[in-house]
Image 1 (cartoon, rainbow, N blue to C red):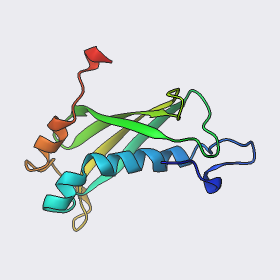
Image 2: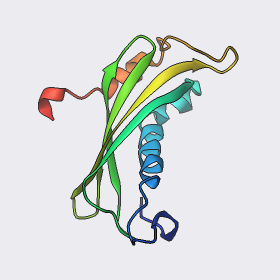
Image 3: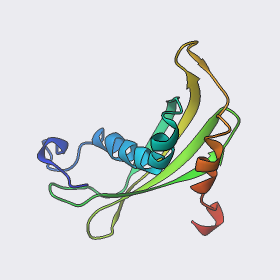
Image 4: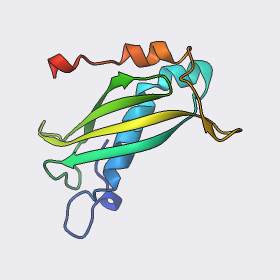
Length: 128
């Protein structure tokens, strides 16, 4: 991804809220294979935390690395690292997703078909 003019605030760096779009893009890409094969596994975002470490600027190339940190019964946690084109770590983020049934508007267990896709992206915390 390239930082676009619309992403930059009056201080000349990427606005903090735009990082949510960057990590969302990484999350969708992570599960693209599942979505293409099975459609959507519905979940809602229950929590997001972002530590801003270094600013991103207009025309920076942005790379987001994403992985699964934890898998529960009804939720899973993803970790993210956001880098600029010089390889500088600009942000660390984490999001918690909860399985969700849009018809009943209740949380649900993670579907067994989705579990292998989560496990495929798990990263050993000892290697971080």
